[in-house]
Length: 119
Image 1 (cartoon, rainbow, N blue to C red):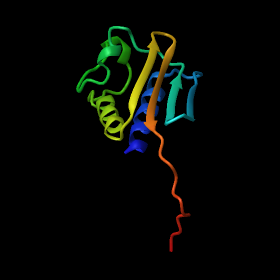
Image 2 (cartoon, helix red, strand yellow):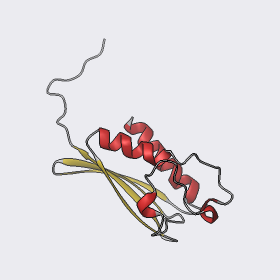
Image 3 (cartoon, rainbow, N blue to C red):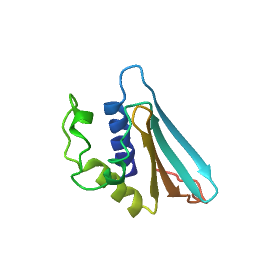
Image 4 (cartoon, rainbow, N blue to C red):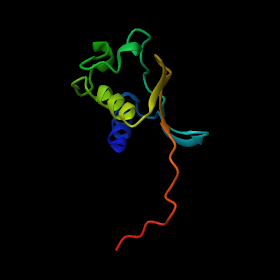
């Protein structure tokens, strides 16, 4: 499910980052959690839209999506559900014309004590 969440965020970045822009994936451990972030240099999200992006069926300003494929407005709501149901939280930073950073903060788990051997 986390793979689906990352794919949805990456797809949003691809959709709203113009040609020549960049999308960066970051992953690091910070004390008791792992941070997975997707940062882009896309069109950004307005201050008015930002508090609502995880609401089901919410779609940002029509001008922002002009020329883009239509969406159901469920993608980010599903992402939030996946992350929170796996014990994580989402942090979003964005500004119009400056891009967006979306980070998942997930609880770190110790790896297996014994090597995993498959037959």
